Image (cartoon, rainbow, N blue to C red):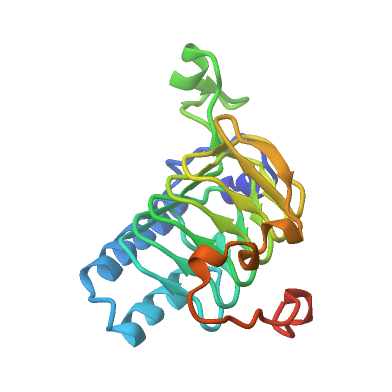
Amino acid sequence: MQEDEKRRAGLLFFPGDPALVAQKRKAHKASQDFNRLYEDQIEERNAILHEILGAFGEGSFIQGPVTFHYGCHTFIGHHCFVNFNFTVQDDGEVRIGNHCDFGPNVTIVTPVHPMLANERLALTDNEGRSRRLCYAKPVTVGNYCWLGAGVILCPGVTVGDNCVIGAGSVVTRDIPAGSFAAGNPCRVIRTLTDADSIFHKPEVLGDFLTPPDDPGDDPKT
């Protein structure tokens, strides 16, 4: 079984495998190339993202700087906005839905290392090779989510559709759809309802606003 096959299967794998190292170096170089461009160089930036990511949807925008570990294991949907300093350690797959907003300094991590120090240093396989190994758990973010500044998504978590994750939260377990969740570790504060509508905040409305159609009617979702 090849190391990339082990990675995909959620088994212990050797991240120093030459094929995996080559992919990581390609993604690291592309991230640096992206970060050297100005934000109005949209075509050049998008070309880099389409080259290294598994998917980058129509109308999505990444402010930068950004760091992707593999890149090809990250899939970003349509009409997403990603603010400064987005870091994705995508040893496992990272899937982000449509119409998501990410504050600055959001980090997504998928790899998991052994808890015991001696096992982190090395494990010996059945061929007698001693290597530093890890495994990975995928991360999923649904549609119409807002992740505040400094949110960290830990390996294996799923954030359901229409969630808001408060700034600085460390998400260690799944968050059900339609939730406002925050904290370290992140926990559900309440279910979002019409009581959370901006129209209940007249002090910030200014000129009259017309709410969009129900997001569930969006043909791109």
